[in-house]
Length: 499
Ligand code: SF4
Image (cartoon, rainbow, N blue to C red):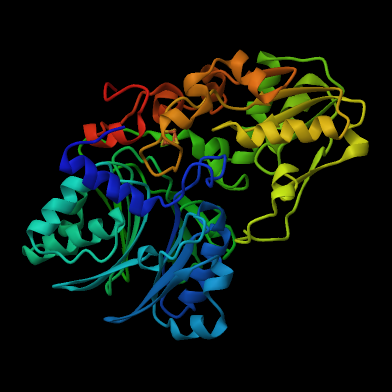
């Protein structure tokens, strides 16, 4: 793609700065962008509680982690590259004293040093410091950036999250107080944002008018009640907090010594939760719509078996995310559920490149087929999605090498045909296997005996919610938040800028 105007080039530079991996290095799955956590709890060890909250949200991002605490007007901040357990230790947490903590965990890359992009973003304002943790992605960053630069704002990082914090500071500079400034800044942002914001007075939680990314409120203790904010309920469970409710789309909650106050800052909220959160990103033990995502994912598997039955001897899931749907498939089809692949669970990400021969043997660094279970069997393998198809192909090869007679692949979501602009790092459209190939052609490329995806209808009906309350754009191209031309062109290679 040739970009010839400076705004486009600038946008590409911005994207490059945020996405240093080329497509070969990228994992063959959509990558979650971030997890956020906030707690207002005078008298508690808020840094430690934030640490454990982030520890539970680690699956949402493994690149970097950070915690900011407020001790009156004083802010303590520690952030670095790495997993939560690598970034913090007891002595670091001991130094993070205060009544308020804001935490963030950011999605993974190959490990290039990007410490300055770690969050929370900390910005000085007329009213004191503000710490901001963001999950999601703005689509109007270039516009916001030029507004900030015009006002001589000092952009230290290349993240849209810092821009939101600076926009709040700009509004404060113009004379508004905390709440009003945040609301004014949110009106200048377009895209997906679930935010946790810390100030010396209290914490705020806010979601964009479509509530694309999740954000929940929990309570800790009774006397007095203390409040916690987290991307998912698993971030509450780990510290013994009780789930209270979701932050609503277009809502801002302001938690101070007086308790929790709610403000509906958007006149036109329209719920469009990312359905991929339910299919794959969020942890299976997290609760959405009053049930665990494990239960939803099992239902997807049951529906998949009804829609695309197959004669086979055993069924298993690609660990871990394909397992609940595989169990559902087994329940509905009567095909025995087994473990066909064992995941290496006890190691973190490795930054040492494997040898050439290891690369050729395929996927066994992460997943090892159980030969005696697979030998001579007609197998159904269930996965949650296929992005580029590179991992799936290696996986199928490994199953045949282990002695499988037939391999039937079933996917518990529809084909991913469009990229995400709202905070999930999918490839550009030309890299998505289902954007250019039919299901039959994908089956040929993966060398499976059969391949079937769940229907869009099946996916949304299994939610038991209003189908219109979800973003399903990566399956349909129907984007709920309009995307500026230059942003579209950066990823929608196959459709020009016509969406
Ligand atoms: S485009 Fe896909 S991944 Fe992105 S928010 Fe919508 S459903 Fe989620």
